[in-house]
Amino acid sequence: MHILILEAYDNGSHKQFLDGLTANSRHSFSRLSLPARKWKWRMRGSAIYFAQQLTSGHCPDIDDVDIIFTSDMTAVADLRALLPNVLKDKPIICYFHENQLTYPIPDESQRDYQYGFTNITSCLAADAVWFNSRYHLESFLEAVEALLKKMPDYVPTGIVETINRRATVMPLGLPLELFNLPRLNPESQAPPAILWNHRWEYDKNPDEFFEVLFDLDRMGIEFRLIVAGENFRTAPPIFAAAKNVLAGHIDHFGYVPDICEYQKMLGVCDIVVSTSIHEFFGLSVLEAIAAGCCPLLPDRLSYPELICAEFHHRYLYDNRIELREKLIELLTNPIAPLPEQLSQRVSELAWPNLIGKYDDAFDCAVS
Image (spheres, rainbow, N blue to C red):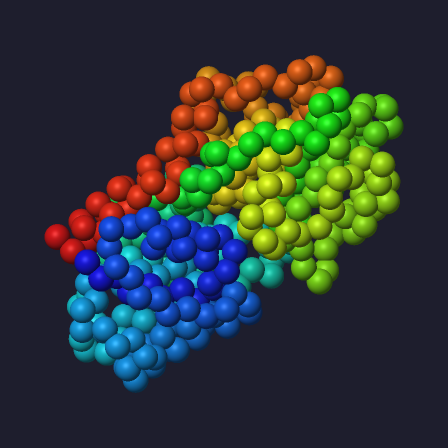
């Protein structure tokens, strides 16, 4: 089967996902993509661009395409209308990495609902919509219902039900090499290393994370700190403050663009912490767990899906006080290996174990 990928934001988790998918699938792929910048312009214009590229012959094997696979960054309704005739009747699958109805913004009154409606019409125009987590799908459907209730009149009916019928949860895959990393502690007597490997943005709630570490520093508790994750031109001020206050604990502080170096860094970490107020999937946390890190995660968002229910009490926390207490417990006692059940659950997301689900879903899309 030949699958045409149209990705308007081809970097970060979007690129990692597609690279893993195409490298492991039994199907063949063509890929048209755009750099990951100016997301609002990508949502508004990528469908027109892709349609023009396809119409003008920039995809030479267009006659052999069986499925079009795109992401939420492309307006599928626009794409469907503008495709060349040879592709108009091909099944379109839209993968939702994120959505613009529940993605948190500092001031909710400034949310542009046009992007949310683009997500809705993409779901209605696609033949299938895949979400990266159950939490993502359910929170999106709730937000769709809430948005439609804001309409003053002539409200369309059955939208949530229609989207739900064509929706499937399809988690992101993990590179197999993450599961085979050696556990490298640079000094056998070194204190445990705490990892932050999230974007340096407000929705990841870095203030709470660093404030807990400030508490530990004042208490004289020993720990090492590795801060990675992608950072941008303007990062929350807490990062500069933390680099100064926690200087004596820091082993690394900054983005690691090289994937091999990043994976080596995971191998020297002991504890991965999230304080996020937003997470549609939790890829960075799963990468760290796959590498053997012990997780401490908020009991909200997608995180309860990542952890087996019987271990929620061990690895999830309710508030900042509980986070601090559980972190102190880990830092002052030997860290137990991850339970076999949790390791098994995460290993199911390794691409060689997950790819069959994707390939079968692609087969179903044309049956």
